[in-house]
Image 1 (tube, rainbow, N blue to C red):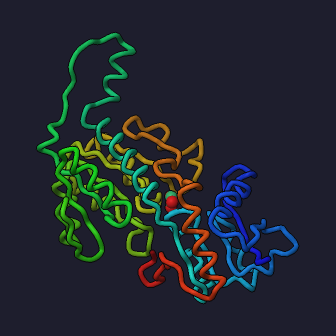
Image 2 (cartoon, helix red, strand yellow):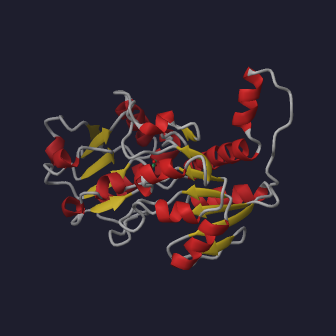
Length: 311
Ligand code: GLV
């Protein structure tokens, strides 16, 4: 039986069993094993989430790595090790929908001032608060790939005006799309809500920094569900409370966010523990099982990563 390595950081020990049960519904001819299994060196494929790549690199038979999430930055960080392998990611409509729900929750909280009403309730204050006019505000989504385009479509169906930014020009029915530095700057200067859903690549690292925050309108909402490294954290803190009325963050440079991190003390920052669109084993298993089957048969599955682009 062919061996497939499994490592998923930060999840319960029985996660391998959950994956095993769900993968076996679609393909049976393999065995999932932990890194410390004596047969681990036989594996051609590894299923990984934030694995210690220096340990993974010791398994010399590996030919393909499959990310157990939609992002692959945790795998291709060490490009020297992976450059002769193929890397794949999960693209799951369930996860895109789940992200869309979280974005809707976050945006409605901001425009209806949910936080303000919670504070009023504690003080027994019964009065209306300022509400942004959803017809007048612009929502900028940076990254309109498999997830971003679903978020854009759903927000559009709620009556919001959406602008989407991507690396290259793309045409969408539900929103106006921008690309290039000029397009990016236009959205930064004109949007009221900014959503980062970019993949983390060498071109998008620190893309939200002081120069960018400075160009934003006063009182915007900034939402990050991409990666912590997209933001210069100290610049975000500097602009929070003036330009940025509210920052809603689901991802951080160091996760779990250390208890001493200054974000915890910022009253204009809402912190979520990387849960906006968690991998759903039941819905993701079919494509992972199919990928395992194809790779073992010497074929190329869908959602292969292009190392030049970084996603
Ligand atoms: C989550 O961050 C993912 O990459 O799926």
